[in-house]
Amino acid sequence: MAVTVVTVVSASATAPLTAASASPLAMAFWRNALGFAALGRFLLLLRRREVVRVARGERRLLRREQWTPLGFGFLAATALALHFAAFMTSTWLTTVAG
Image (cartoon, rainbow, N blue to C red; front, side):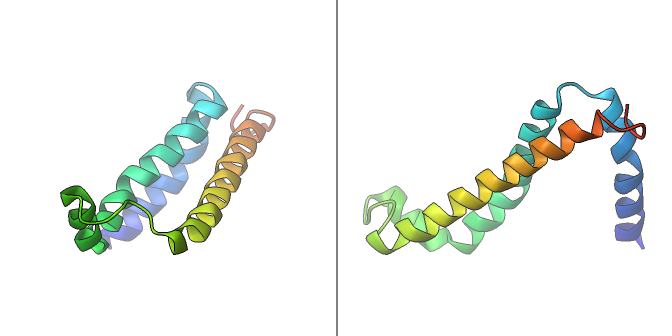
């Protein structure tokens, strides 16, 4: 029940917050940054053994086979950032948020 309430309130607050906020590009940046902050700790939790080994100096940060997925992840994150930037900018051009 609480999840439903949070979801409804979040979806309902999107248009007013978009209209009252600063630059659309700043909103896109902070949306990505807060998403990473929220999900980054789960990544560290899932990969805690690797993080400990890297911190101790037992292995390098990235192995050779990890470069390809890292490149695809960078492309996906860039595409998501561009999507957010275009979406947030387009909300200023509509009558809902402007």
